[in-house]
Length: 123
Image (cartoon, rainbow, N blue to C red; front, side, top):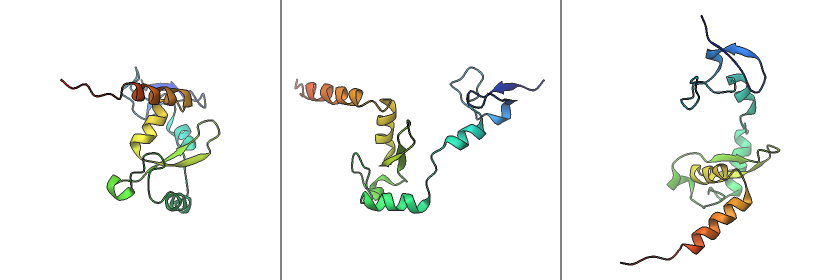
């Protein structure tokens, strides 16, 4: 008996092989089929990436790490509401934005927290 699953995006029932592996789910597969994931992936033309890279001086738009020190390609940051491209970020800064669910108030609270607890305790 072959295993099948319904895609949460297109609602089609497909064979398990149409879903990427994901150890965090109960059945070990993503909830969205590979076709739907491919359609949603942020695709940017190389020329557009290069233009954005040059406009940012070859640095992460948030922390300013340069691409040579970083040693890998920057992530294309985009608004999940309208898919507009905001800039290029290093993995760490892109993760911060994502973990905060793109909520400015969460990030402002985190800044306030760090400022409040920015004192060093010396023994």
